[in-house]
Image 1 (spheres, rainbow, N blue to C red):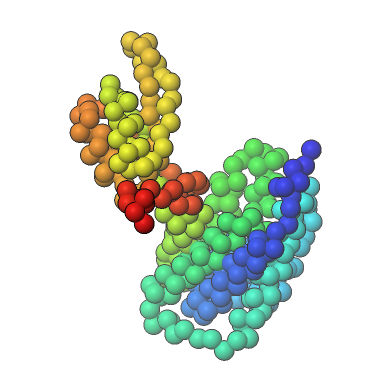
Image 2 (image 1 turned 90 degrees about the vertical axis):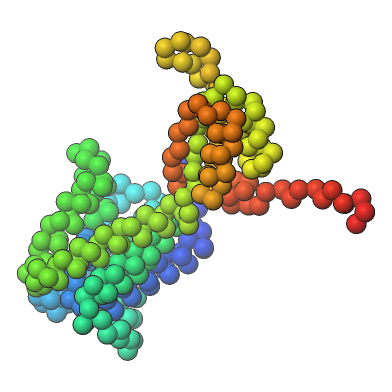
Length: 297
């Protein structure tokens, strides 16, 4: 049964998808096209068609994506198909707009800067688009169909498709421009990951120590962070061992390490990235401490 909450169309999603499409289209027109840099996916195909047949990417984006969306309809949910169709239309509209707005950022003398700018702006637009559930269709739909039919992971298919498109782009650009296109693609992926993973990376910490309760008390008192106790068992001794789990911000990690070392220098500590933390102290503030002078205020 379909989850109605999951399928709900939200105005904020549509707004942010539109902004993401506008930013990505801006990068494609002002940086990629203006500096003869290629691109991967369907956008890369539209740039090839532009170079060979002078077809406006605003129109070829629609022409290529609409059949793919129709083919992939049964592989997408109701909201996904609506967001994909909306994203495709928004991207085409902004590609049309930016090509007719007299904006010029002269970076042709420095392809390194052009590749950097294309990656940053394009990645920011796409990251925003993906973060709010949007997509511009294209190779995403192809990869999803291949995953369903052949069991090949989407990421692997997308990589292969990008390689094919970028190789084909050598028809109209030289090796130098391709090198800077690869720089753009790398920065693009890093920016997308940064936006999808949140504005910062929190740290998850697992602690095994003989001084567990003392460490818990210190964390809750000094750092004001909650601690979860996972009941574990030693693989050799089969003795019960509590495993402490705590999530802290990057700036608190050093204090946490010092706090653990003070209690138990032999504690076993594992630290890993947490891409997003939702809850008290992360997405909303910690409760304020009671002032010791509140009775006199």
